[in-house]
Length: 143
Length: 143
DNA sequence: TTTAAATTATGACAAAAATCATATTTAGGA
DNA sequence: TCCTAAATATGATTTTTGTCATAATTTAAA
Image 1 (cartoon, rainbow over the protein chains, first blue to last red):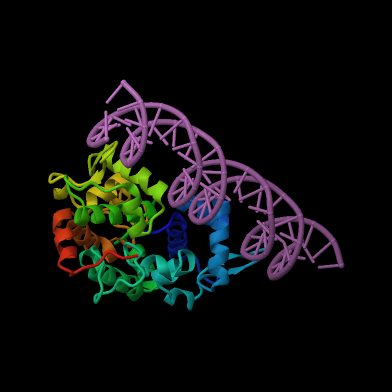
Image 2: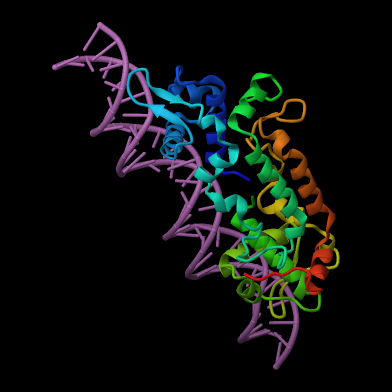
């Protein structure tokens, strides 16, 4: 479904959503280790997310990555779009150029409407919502 | 969602489901061209499907690939499992080792039940069903 | 039994995704 | 102002996926 890169990115951003703040920035090492992702590679991904203003960062002493209050209003789909690109989730299962309900491929009616629901769900919860859910113990973020 | 390999394989098998029979085997060239997939690569994929007895083939003069009546009772998930492996579809969205409804990751409740429905749909329709649907013009198999 | 037409097996090659390494830039604190 | 700790930029390397080429094997028909 997602590339490894996107999985890594989502885990890292959720980690930041729970543990970071403007006042408490987190260094790449301290993100990579708990979520079990190669540090140098994660650094690249977070740099890209930062450039696309999905997350925030500051260089230098006392610097690190964090989510601003604005960042916390983003959702999972924003992360996916930046790392995997919008096409990956939006395209037809068989990558047919013009597959739609008027002209459906053989798999269209087996998956389309469920896929739309999933997409809507990805858009409907903010990172803040997900962080609160995690903090309340209703979901987990381990290996 | 799927690898290119799986997309190619599904398109090819659907093509065989519509156009081939025990009496009418189809040569690799005549499958690859209409579905627009690199011929040599498709050959490898079909060989694998043949080895796993998802499709049938005979060598030599008058040979080619085809679906037996038995083959036609297979479903889309059988193809996916052979080419992409079962894990790709079954694993947690974030690839967490033990994510389930008791111990859900942050995305679990956003996608799990819809994903199950899609999986069930992939299993519930036989290749024959899909071929009939295609033949009736209710779905299409172009580029 | 020979020949031609097909799959099958094998491996080389290319492109993309993932990983690792390092030099540069930036910001805070002494 | 200078030093140190951090992100950033860049690119090299490795692994995986996708692609191409070809020799070996098998089968049907002449």
